[in-house]
Image (cartoon, rainbow over all chains, first blue to last red; front, side, top):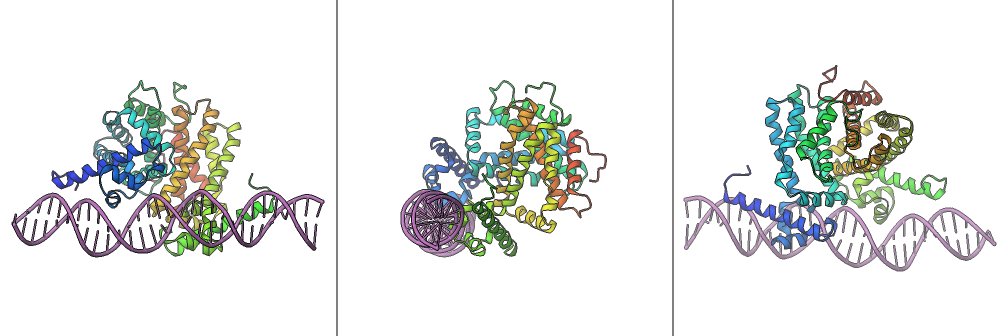
Length: 205
Length: 205
DNA sequence: AGGCAAATTTGCGCCGCCTGCAAAATTTCT
DNA sequence: AGAAATTTTGCAGGCGGCGCAAATTTGCCT
């Protein structure tokens, strides 16, 4: 449905990426997505304003385009892993396999993180996408654990795991960066596995 | 700052509640907040449109007004409990102490939940408020656990706990309702305490 | 009671977001 | 090249949300 070698699909994806990049660039230079208008974004990317809204329903969605693609990839990966791994490990490894640190520049990631952090509308948008991810993944987890999608347990598992991924990733980003992201995620999951009540063995971290 | 016996404050709170109630009423009857305009809400509450936006920045915020108040109460309660209880118990008991089932009609809560569930803008708004709650609570948790606000551990604890409260509450709402909400929350927390990896003793739930 | 100061309500104008619709331009296929 | 399908674009319109200043209301004090 998406990545057919169709020349058409490629151009669409290209302009979508261009739009997203333009949004990011402008948001950075103008210090906040709030002071960037849809017209400016369209101009920066060399298309009409109407076309911009043809690709993205909002500038927030435009800025979070890669995030969206990443979560989609995570979802596809999780679907595969759930067939052969215990669900907890599957989610963890799917999170690790995203390899954010290889796909993106570290500085850019921090930059993006800060943009999101101090823009209420972006926080909402990102949270909304997380909820969408949750909704789509819950079926996978339910099936893998032999429970119903309406049961409490799969929701607790998935919720905890996603929170863990998000939290550890953010924490890793704000860190002077000695460990790899994979190590950070692994440690976060380990803490939850052992029961969250007691601090981990290395309390200062 | 808020609940002084000042007659003025009372009237403000009253109109705010009226506005919120009007929003809820209209959203229910028109089957979706999306098809309710700010003008209608203002008219329903007997004030001008401008005044409505004077109280709430958006109709979503208006609909989630009680939710907001609830989280504020939770925060205040947590601050107190954190002084004397282990942090995990403090968060759990603060969540239980909200007594949503006593404050609100069950049918109304389900109704509200459904309104939120199939309105992307409401999901975003609610998620955003959760993030705000997280941000405000992280300091409390960090202090209580003797860690820094930038550390990973307090964020994992708080994140897990909040997810647990939200998840169990939603699950409890969709349930034929035999247990109390307090029991549901308690069980959810117990699952996380024991380590999330293995299903709880009663697997069907 | 009456009036004064402060706060609230309201109207107005403005900008920006977002969508539907139909015409124009571009691309793909034959 | 010509036709068909698709994308881009402009236009119009509705709605959301905010600043500002005038008008109204409220609380308080003499």
